[in-house]
Image (cartoon, rainbow, N blue to C red; front, side):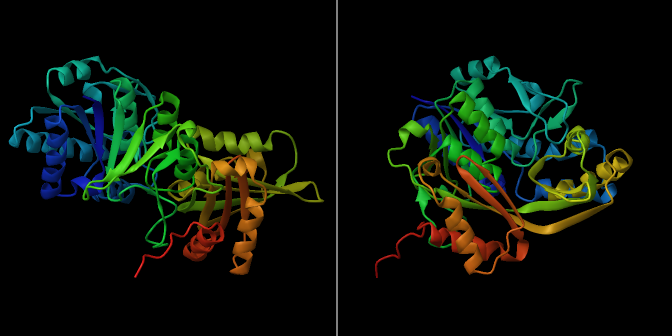
Amino acid sequence: MARIVMKFGGTSVADLDRIRNVAARVKREVDAGNEVAVVVSAMAGVTNQLVKWCQDLSPLHDAREYDAVVATGEQVTAGLTAIALQAIGVEARSWQGWQIPIHTDGAHGKARVEAIEGETLIERIRQGQVPVVTGFQGIGPRNRITTLGRGGSDLSAVALAAAIKADRCDIYTDVDGIYTTDPRIVPRAKKLEKISYEEMLELASVGAKVLQTRSVELAMKQRVRVQVLSSFEDKPGSLVVDEDEIVEKPIVSGIAYSRDEAKVTLRRVPDRPGIAAAVFGALAKANVNVDMIVQNIGADGTTDLTFTVGRADLARARDVLEKARAEVGFESLLADPDVAKISVVGIGMRSHAGVANTMFRALAEKGINIQVISTSEIKVSVLVAAEYTELAVRALHSAYGLDAAPAAA
């Protein structure tokens, strides 16, 4: 007998038939003698509609009210899933984030999980009940509903798995595992049987949509074994595990891309101590995450400062920076939302030279200009014009020998 958290994404609960399918999968685990807790996302498209309503009313809306609105999607799904389970003879009860409770900080729209009180759920599970928990949400320090950011249901599931001491956290989605890149762009992408927490964290952080970044970060910290598998096919999934469990460590495990980037350049910034702190401190205070950063020093005592933010944060970033113009002293602000970040990731990079050179050569051969470069121990990322996204991904996937062999005739 195992204790399993089963998380179902938006496409898995997109309509009533799919919710019935989810209930059947949960029942199968229960009938096998396993203890089960379920975490659900909102139905596909619902959160986008709720977000759009908030943005249409006010682009710079109150984040507390935004959370009150967008958290409703998961509440509907949790209740419907519990009803579907009850209809097929499984004792189930829906739980909202505040009922457990899932305690978070007060960063509305991007809250971080601080603690989950799992004792009540453990007791219910031991009694044979299946808790169906709303993903994506918690309760903040002022007793207001908070949300965890897009993809936050993954984080809810991993955090819940850690809190109830689950043996595994199964993430059910519309793909049957983790691939070397997006199979929609590269049909010959290969499914990975296992991938390390560190590689998955890098892939998630640079655009891979399979798992949310913070969920992988928490899984690595708490050593929660995570399995990604399909809601619609009975196929083996991909396991996210300790590096020690992977025998052969490839040089490059995957190619990721993100079109959710925007490039910001501050022209002719005074080159003096404290300027970077003023710029990025103001953005941090407004909960705007900054990613790639490049500084070019001029001969006239000024510098151009280029960095990327999430495209959804661009309007907020511009507003913050314009208000800080007097303090920072930049001459002009240029914004470009038509960019994409392309990344190669692999734990084998630690012991192999030439990975970056292969990337730069492959892009140059396709005539793709690199705007910004950033690296880590197991990752190289570049910023390119958005129109070259698919071409860049395909070129790099081939350059690193990741294409699967063609099927036999």
